[in-house]
Structure formats: C-alpha cells, structure tokens
Image (cartoon, rainbow over all chains, first blue to last red):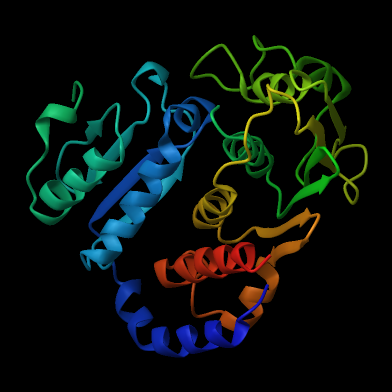
Length: 120
Length: 183
C-alpha cells in the first residue's frame, strides 16, 4: 500500500464533515450480494449506487448497504429501498444505467421508478 | 461467473458470514499458473459440512435450496486442468486456530481460463460491506506485487472516520489501480 500520506490528507479534510453525517437517517438502499446477485451483476450496480449517491451529495440522507440472498434469485440484481413511513420498494433486474436512474429520480427526486419494481 | 474476481467476492462473503474478523485474499501468478487463496479466521466448518460444500445442492441458507458459490469456483479451476482445496478448523475444536482456507490452482494458458477481471472492485466492495473486518490483499505477479492491508489504513484514519466512507473507498480504488498501472 502506497500513498498513505495522501490518506492522511483525506482524513484531515473529512474530520469536519463526519460529525454531520452521524445524524444521518432517512433512506437505506440494500443490494443483494449472494452468489445469485454477484453472478447477475450486483457488484457494478452496488458500486454505481455508492458513487452516484456521493456524486449527488446524498450521503447525508442515503446509506447504501449490502445483504445476502433476498430469495428471488431469478430477479437479481435486486435493490431494495427502505424509507421510514413508506412501503419498501424492490427494484429487480438492475444494471448500471437503471441504478443511475433510481438515484436521480427516486433517491434524489423522491419519485419511485415504477417500471423497474416488482410486487410491493 | 464471468470473472474470477466475482468468484473471489462470492467466496469471501462466506468468510464474512462465518464471522471472520480477518480475511486474506492472495493471488500468485507464476509461469502459466495462478493460485488463489482465501483464508479467514471465521467459525470454520465441521467435517460433515466440509464434505458437503462442494455439492451444489447443499447450502446453509434457508431462502433457497442450492448453494452454487463453491461449486462454481471449483469448476472454474478444474476446467483449466487445475485444482481446488478447502480445509477448515471449527471453532469448537480450536477457538484460536479456527477458520477456513480455500486454495485453487488455475492454468492460465488453458482456453477455459476465466479472466481475473476487476479485482480492485471486488476488494472495495468487500471493504464497503464489512468495514470492521481486516482485509489483507496480495497479488503477486511476475513483474511485481500489489498489496493492501486495511489495518494500515485504519491506523492512519483513526477511530473517527469509517473505512467505508466514500472518500476512503475511492482512495483505496485509486491507489490499487495506480499500483497495478505502475507494474
């Protein structure tokens, strides 16, 4: 591992913003990362969600996490969105472009992208 | 799986599920072979479970009845003429030495060799999902070595900044990619 000095600079820059993030609640985005999800392409979907959430400055209200098999392997990659006081939204057969759309319209805009969802 | 790095991600997820606090991912390329080792200090498996893990119709999960992770990885190695080994010490047998080790050998000149793919993405995905676990990654190639130890990163970050903050994940991704490019 090189460039640990660079890491120290990142740390110092972040120290101020972390306190703010601790109070983060709100939206939780969960990506299925078991064999079924991984084989279907969950890794780039997860990474896109993480990057786009940061890019859109949504980190204060959105957390992206991973889970195991959700139980609907044929619909992987599956992304679930949990928001307090609202029904869970399940996005299926996701890919990088769909993930970007979900960040833009749902996580940022508050509008569920119904065409990628399943059931309720 | 289209890339071996996806198999590695999948197998390492088993280590995390087994409660490992340290996971080592070691890739060694030599002549026309690639050895991949995934070593954890999780709860290990009983002899009976160990015999069963290569059976695709065995799984510990309850959400479905098949467990393809290990059979996929084994197949990927064996189709190149290589081999697959799994050893495990259960925590009830020895709580200090417990854990599981998966070791696979690939012949890289085989037409059926699956490319390693985006291994950096696999490492950052694991760190993102389990920031409290220590990950050691070493990829030895003929012309040099790329390595990472999250304990070193944690030592710099201190307790205030989580390892899975986007800034840190980006840093890890960029510095690993830079190390690969400098080989």
